[in-house]
Length: 317
Image (cartoon, rainbow, N blue to C red; front, side):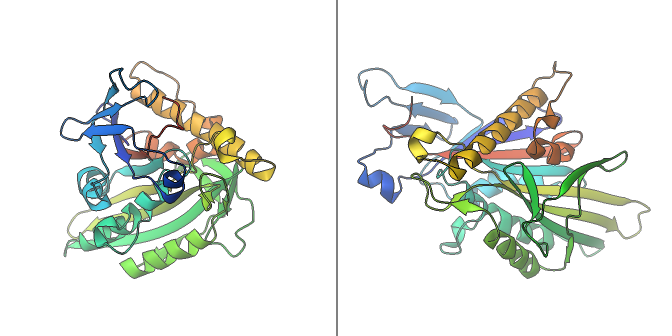
């Protein structure tokens, strides 16, 4: 995972998931250990067990026994709590690594409820008595570098990116839905989730073939003050990076994978440029994913990106 703050260096946080049934059937085994207190990961090459493991240090490391509730409280909470700032939460990793599980989650056990529904609860339950909120939500996907409205009347219609001198980059025709409760947010999320593009690969039978961005726009007015605070929160479930040799992608699946990998590469370049204080050019125009993300990635922002993976003998080390 990566936490990027406008006034600080990039922070990287990694989550490791357990083996799934497919990996167990293939005889895979976990070759990663973590020292969560120190944020360290140790990867052992199964073909060279006498060699010392490779060691990587991050700002946070969450192992198999950690749940989404703990990750949310320690990592995502500060991004959402600072109202008046723009923020983005990314879920990043290879296909089948558990990104959607972290973002959407499951209801049972409650500790594994995802970051997106937790964000809904956080926003509405933290409203002060002397504060008035206007909350609007939108849900889009970027599929094969085409933008679609997951909540629109025609979810297959291609939408255009536009740029405004004051409000910056925006998606023309993207529907905005005013919400007044946690239940309404959850209903919108479920509707959009069902409209996402998914497909079968050897690594994941329900692989996300698109990047989805759930956006919450908030206007906050504190009674007695003469100004309005506006903030934008992007909750992003990225499509997984892929290797054709592992996923068995051919035809349309292969075309999708190519577009996915190109946009993820562009996103990585943008984050690297933002993290480099000497960099004068941020290449956010290289893909629609980075252009849509330009507002929360530049200026007064908080950005959290989560990479979740499991390492086993079929991975390159």
